Figure 1 (cartoon, one colour):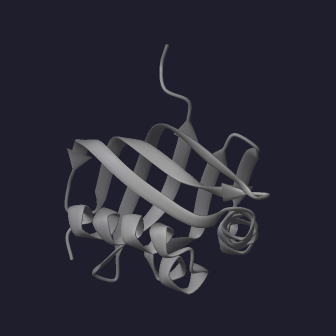
Figure 2 (cartoon, rainbow, N blue to C red; figure 1 turned 90 degrees about the vertical axis):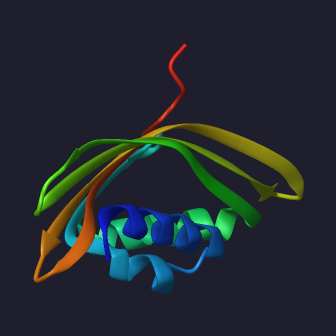
Figure 3 (cartoon, rainbow, N blue to C red; figure 1 turned 180 degrees about the vertical axis):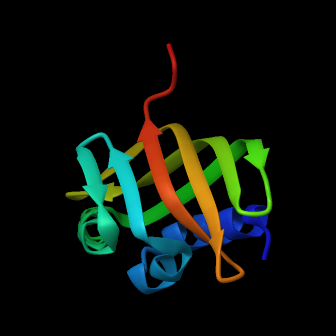
Amino acid sequence: MTPQEILKKYELALASQDWKSVEPLMHENVCVTFSNGTFKGLKEVEGVFISNFASIQDEEYKISNLHWAYISDTEAVCLYDFNWKGIIEGEMCSGGGRGTSVLVRENNQWKIITEHLGPFAS
């Protein structure tokens, strides 16, 4: 698979709200930064994803406006917009922002090693 295919698969995995679909796309040393903190390593990242999945019911997640800033045989960097909507505590909620993902290729497989999500620029 290409980095582009992995990021598309990641978008679909997030929309499924199933950690078992997300985990194979993550590097064991993954580092993820959300608005509520930075989470390092597969176990910490698993915990925050499962918590997020549990708090948002019927979530729809979309990635758009992808810009591949760098792609080599072993690394790739992508910037994008993300948007989500779903039900939190019985109320429809939505949000979005800008994301950056760094992918590495090891053992002939692309994995996400870093993801940083933040607000849209003002």
